[in-house]
Length: 385
Image (cartoon, rainbow, N blue to C red; front, side, top):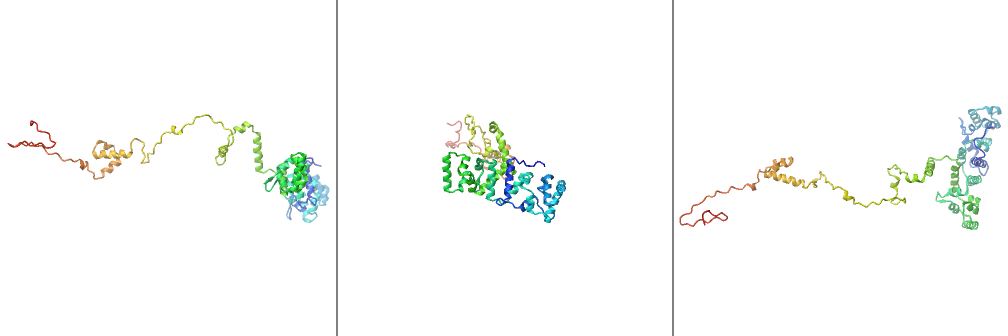
């Protein structure tokens, strides 16, 4: 006979076999025989899907078919996968075998030997799990040393993760039970996880702890045992943890932070005091304003000038020089010259058109008459005293 696919000496294989045997009992019946067939050999009138016989060699599945009387012993040993599927399908449709016969023919040992254990766990876990089945699973895992007391307290959670460890156990214990537990712990002096379990009793813990908390621990065990494939998030976490543990302390300190999707580095998200030692050089403080060049006003702003004179002052001077007819008028901007040329302003301001002074005529004095008095402000006549 061929060697089974799953090693019977492995603790995980023993766990699955124990729970499959328990499933077939009255107290552990979480999946019925009909659900067993629907999962491993789903069929209808038109066809079937074989998920169990195609995993077995001929010398294992042949005797099962011959025991049902649907195939001869020698022929069953030679049938290929397609033939076996058609024969079993025809027998189910015709009523030659039913779900109970099917489950009895594929024994717990044969099933666990050849089916992928992850497929079996998926079948069992999606059943209507009872408290008895959950407690049996955790007790079996502990007996096979797949989990220990420290692991249990680290992975049991209740009330949606609000309670963990011993808080989960105490949540459903009475006051007297908690007092008795503490008294035994004091007497034993052993506060380790094993001491906690020994003081209260493993059976009491399984019986008193909330079933949702135990189920949370059971699912954690399935991941630990490899019965559940890791999700992408779990793989990322494991990869990050492995990368972190593989780095030396020097690499961890000197690794440059990488930018996130929003363009910020991890250091940008830290507060002003991140707790990391930083060496600050002794550099004197320098007033940055002393090194800055004076701001240059914009040429587009008419109210601000960059030179020593305002543009308005330059423009006014040019206008004034043009009005006075001085050579400086040529320096005025073209726009200003055109503006003044279009006006009626005379070439010279009227205020500058002074009348010509009258000619000075000397008058001869009449005989006997006194000489005329000089006009106020006029110079004295030469030759007179």
